[in-house]
Image (cartoon, rainbow, N blue to C red):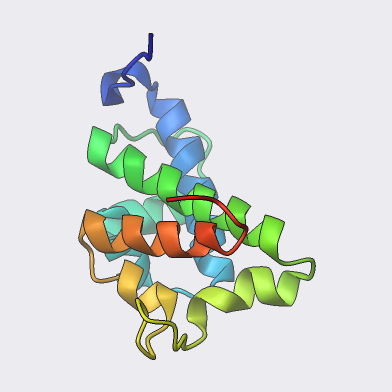
Length: 134
């Protein structure tokens, strides 16, 4: 039986760790502050506080935000499986892609539209590069 994970199942320190990991990845993908905030559905102040690395800072995130963090981490994992070199792992999300779904747009631009469907569909397309079925 599958167990549904709820946002309240995560401590504030776990939320901070996940948020910082996702922001680290987005930073390496060259996402702007605005893009990162839209992808993760966080405020600019939360973005700035998370990047300060204050060990005392804590934040509670809702289920949607934790799902977004999970998708970013999964996109990163898929890219690491597809590509051997860091230039592609970190560069791919910012490159224009002419495949059907992307239509000349960069994956990061689609993710930064801010809606969960765009983020998830971007993940599906990138995950498919490694041969995964969707």
